[in-house]
Structure formats: C-alpha cells, structure tokens
Amino acid sequence: MLGIDVGGANLKIVSGEGIRSAYTPLWTGEGRRRLGEELSGAGDVAAVMTGELVDAYDTRRDGVLSILDALEAADGEVVLYGYDGFAAPDEARQDPLAFAGANWKASEELVESEMGDCVLMDVGSTTCDVVPVGASDCRSDLERLAARELVYSGALRTDLTALTRSVEVRGADVPLAKERFAVTGDAYLVLGDIGEADYATETPDGGPKTGEAARRRLAHTVCSDTEELDAEEIVSIAEQFRDVQIAEVAEAAEVQAARADAETAAICGTGDFLARKAAEMAGLEVIDLKDLFGDFAETLPAHAVRELALRRGV
Image (cartoon, helix red, strand yellow):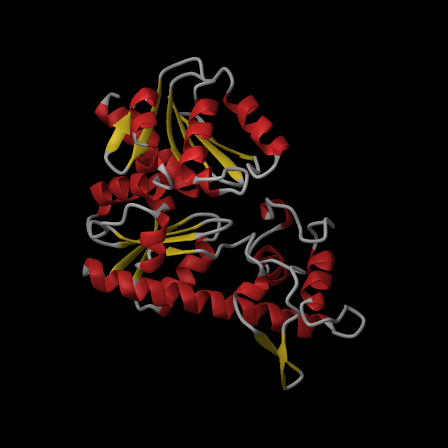
C-alpha cells in the first residue's frame, strides 16, 4: 500500500521501501497533469490532501473532487482519510469538505498513539502545523488559522515580505520592497540551514538555486544588490527574516502547549530546523520524530495515513 499526501506544490508518496516527493504545482496545468501521471497505475492507496486550496479550483469542494478523480487513476483500492476517519471514494464525494486539508489529522492520530500529549510541529515548504495533540477540535483551515494551529508560513516558499515590514541595514530601519524578490528558501540557503538540493520549489526570479543567486535575491528585498551590500550584510538580513519567522511559530507553540497541557514538542518536516528553534524558544522539550519514524518523519502525513490504514486493515 502507498501512503499519499497531495499538497498544492508537492506530492509525497510513502511505501514500505521508502519515500518520494514529486513537484506537482496544482495551480498549473502541467502540475495537474504530472499528478495524474504519478498516480496512474499505482496499487492500493491511502491518501490525505491539502492541495484543494490552489487557485485552479473555484472552491475547496471542487478541489477535493478533482484530486479524488486523480487518485482513482490508481489500479488498486483507494481510501481517503478525513476528519471522521477513512472513506471510500464514493463516500468521500458525499461530503468532500470532510477531507479538505485533513492531512494534519492523520499525523496527529499517529503521534498521539506513540507519544500522548505533546505539540506536533510539522514545518513544510509552505505552512507550519502546530497541533495540540489530543486537544484540537478544528475541522477546516479557517478554524485552524483562527486557533493558531496553522501558521501559513513555511521553510521554502514563503514571500519574505509576508514575515516583516522592515529589516535593519547599517543601523537604519529599512522598509522592504513590497515585491516577491525572495522567499524563505533563499534565506535558509544563505544561512546554511538547507542545501541547494533541498530548495525544492521555483525561485522568485526563475534563477538558479545557488548561494550566490540567493544572496542577490535577498539584496533585492531592500532594493540593493551584491555590489552595494557585502556577504555579511546579506547574512544579517537573512538572520532577521529567520528570527521573525521563528518567533511567530514559537508564539503559536506556546498557545498550543497550554491547550494540550504539554511540555514536549514533536518536530518534523522540511523545516524541522525551524521547528526545533521555535520549540526551544517556547520552552518545550524537543523530540525529533526521526527518532521514532526514521526518514518517514520527513513526509509525516503520507506515512501516517499509510500506517493508520494498515493498522485498521482498510
């Protein structure tokens, strides 16, 4: 059986042999075509999703139904996990919104079975889940945003101007250019938190995913370049973006720790380095889910939905 997490930007696939990620930007026709190709001919599938929110779909309902159509390209049995557990495709079509954005719920159920009360912090390329394990009653992304369980900020794709309005340069508070010149992937590449191979998304300018190109993009956020700003100054800019993002996630972790009466954070995801720093800032003991699940922790929802399906024999 395959465990599949259909995101807006990436398709995560887990089997008994390992994990695989494919860049499938569902807001493009090419991305949706690639999703269909990836799923065609697959065997038994247990799936979760978050990709229903992309601009290609008028409503989340439309998105769920479209993704469900793609999942049915698999040759074997398909089951979808939602807020009320597993369902076959025909059942899921009767209440599509019960499956919209529910990938975190599978992760929560698996982590609760292994660890009990904790704060689950899964930082992906686009968003960060900060889940009070065993204490959440949210059933939509809107509710999760309001409850601070979903922080729409990630380790790769987030526009840096969404994090703060200004940065300090040469002692001055400099307002940012309100343009998508650089993303968090650029900041973390410059800081060494990710490598070039980890920059698994498009760059804002279509340029290379190298340290030199990332420094150029970061300089552009203050209408400058790598001739005017030296490497140390650009690193300082990247550090300021990082610190603001960590503080936002840490604040959410404090809220959820109080709700779950938890002293421990279980961290995972593409941005696990960010989750670790945020959890420590929130005063939580950190447990890396790689110690429990190995490399499967990198794609926790896909691993979780597969594991839960196998346990239940669905």
